[in-house]
Length: 455
Ligand code: NOJ
Image (cartoon, rainbow, N blue to C red; front, side):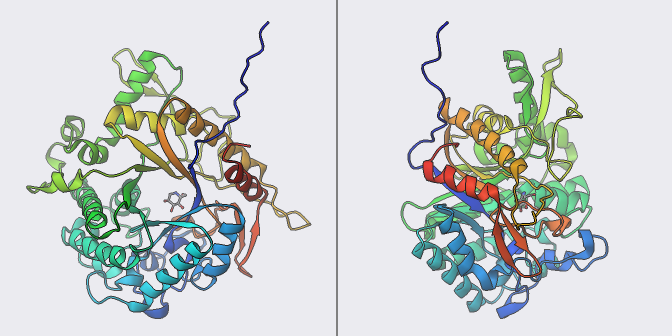
């Protein structure tokens, strides 16, 4: 018997980016301080029964006042990168009017503090906290919001672009449009027709293209920019790796992503989407598709779960039931399917020609227990992340250009409609005292980053 000569060491390439991700509305708090305007999430949280336990983002992790200590934490965990978002209503309180100098000063301090600590900021321009004043004028269903976004992006890039080199235009269009304007589960809580929702999607991808243009025009030379996308429904995972199952997964991936990835990466709405949308397809003005498909430097993917599929005789994909006895995290959609990271990357490349990737979010909420000694021994979260990283490693080993991994999230925070009930952090937030308590997974992830391999 021959013993394999090489045991995988799960080493990542030199220069691989290890970081954590957060979003302004989920951590900052200070929701009315220093001139910040109201966001759609501030407003949504005032409505009955929209947020679990009726909480709101007004204090959250109080990061607005504690950003220095939080930045220390990132440095102390040996993480070289931090994905954060800028709150639009903090910078332009009513969305398209006067600039709030104090808002920009906050981000100056935050960025400077990160750089002083050797942490590279990766900035998302829009992570769902639309100024309520813009929503009052139609929000993403109105084309005027695209212009307001482009102006806001220009303000931020001109101000921070001397120090920030890595940008994301926006986060998870399927969530803030689909849930915000379709199902009403997210702010602003509207339930519009398919026609209106598709138009809102179109405005969001157009705004993404405008954001790319802003970074190219006003960012420092060599700046990088891309979208943060999420798949909704989650990516299909071929249950058996055969040519026919993989082909079926591709058909399914194209069907469920062509509305966004078609225009962005292929410069057109594909037939798969247009045929399904019929009369509900969006109005596209001359020049829109050129803006939307401006070349980006990478695609950010937020991936948490996948769906197993097999091939039907007609070549389409049949969704298999998730195994009853297999684990999921503290949310029903958080099914543990680590190979989805590999397939999410591979399908994006093979179906839409995406060439370079960052994993911009991956992580899990679990119902953590604090021991009598005050420790959080979150072996479940560690197992979740570790297995997903092995799947990223497979993608890299097969030649896919994956450049970074941002774990969601630094610390437990305000999980949108779930309020404070779901804990995704590798650091526990004690909401009574605002103490930050690193969980065991933080110690482990820190070692992964230090050694640049899955330990
Ligand atoms: C996606 C979102 O970008 C983030 O804001 C959210 O908290 C996580 N996923 C977990 O649901």
